[in-house]
Image 1: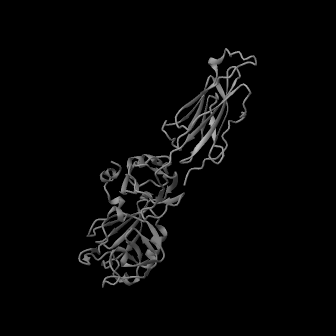
Image 2: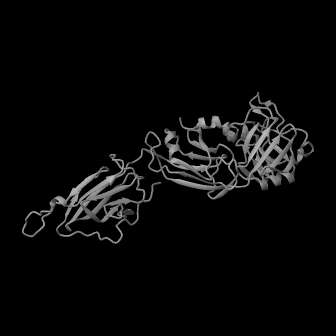
Image 3: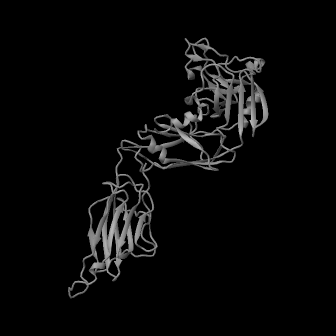
Length: 418
């Protein structure tokens, strides 16, 4: 979709009329500078005016000076040896573009984005020091992208972030484009993360369409975060331009950190670094099945809470284990399920393993809890809360699974644009 380009643009308190002694010239479409200088006579007798050298000169400039103007950059109208009386810029539909004038009435500038691939008409009226009126007509044509891409703000799970929401201290923001980005450096420069208080963080490209921002350390409670994708009018490589700007903000909630120990079979939950709950668990039994392709470990590393489901409907097909396998399952209804990995690891209720929770690991990888503990964790955790699994075997948690905090900072910062 294209930026809106209609609103009032005439100078406040000024008229857009001309006098019979002015000039009215037309210029061909241009994104560079175009100048008009009046040449009218100053009296009915036809004598040449002695003040011709001081007649007003009007210049129209599209910033950048390219053949076609960038619609996200302002168009300016300037006058020399005079003052602007009015400037009216209209889009192809005849709607007036919003603009503003300088205090000395020497410059007028657009105050809104223009549209891609459109030609705008400008009529500027100025008056020189002798009171003579000069009128300048001009046209500005904006560039037409070969292709466009839209950014979206997502959680690690790929679902949309909620503007104004509260997230956990380990929240990772993903900006997902609907096209592969050729110029990743341009994308990183166009997307800013502003925090109060200031936080050190960096971008990491998980694939050619997704850039993720993670702070070096967990956010402090109460931190305000705004992510602004100012991509409209930005060439993101090979003529791919941003379709629209987008912004989202969130607040960081109370510090919740969970540590699950596969050796002790205990899950400990800390609020503000104070232990508030210990929950017996049964985690992944370990080993590999399906010719070594499927791991039954709860992968070691630091996850974050990525969503809540009550109930969750589970199938082993989602992580590559056919439901028809002797170890497979499908249509399993699981209440109070808090998801921590994109490939299906949850902390959830499972009454059938209560007898071994706290003493033995028997699951396919999830962290089984009794009803009371599963419900409590579901109700007291939020998206972005870190969950660390330790003393478990098997492969390490990867970024694509939700392991952004498992990546050392020295490695994370190398994952940005090269």
